Length: 228
Image 1 (cartoon, rainbow, N blue to C red):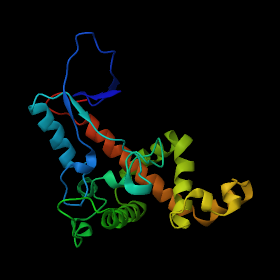
Image 2 (cartoon, rainbow, N blue to C red):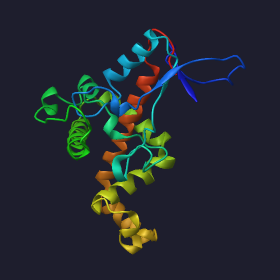
Image 3 (cartoon, rainbow, N blue to C red):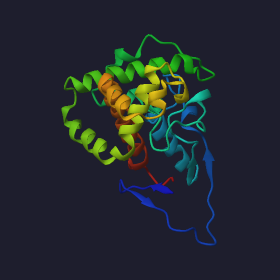
Image 4 (cartoon, helix red, strand yellow):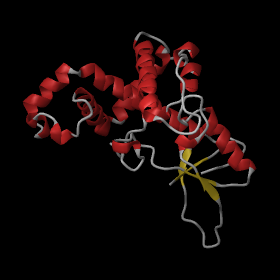
């Protein structure tokens, strides 16, 4: 368990003392207000932490933040390690110089519910634009951080990105419905597949890098008080 503090670091919480008492609110990130059809780890998340503090709350409990699969349920995650790219804030990508404001216009969203059939292609288009801009040299100062992330997280990131690339290649089918040689993880077939679709795996890695950076920023940005 971790806590956000004013010193920009994430620390482990000690065991609760016997007389410890605190309160908080359960609210999933997707339920935060957003002009993009789904709540994200952007300005609204930071404003929510401020509001919790002002109300004297100590805890913010959210549902799992992994990439969702069937039914878009947070409890049907495709990975125990990866972040949900739908939670990346377009506002912060604009602030980072990786998107333009006009990239985000032209799409209408439901005011009362999350329409994943609309949001998923919209967010994926923004992420593809972000990757294209980054690869073309936008914010080259972020390249070392991206490379460091890929290196430090390689124990899961490489296989996960490759898995998602294959899943996209086969139209989102369950992996047991893929070609048998890939299901069996035949080394020759896997090596050929990596040669056939290398760029998609790299793009997925960049999406996770951005997602982790945003999650860390939401936890570590100095706020008026602590909120775990």
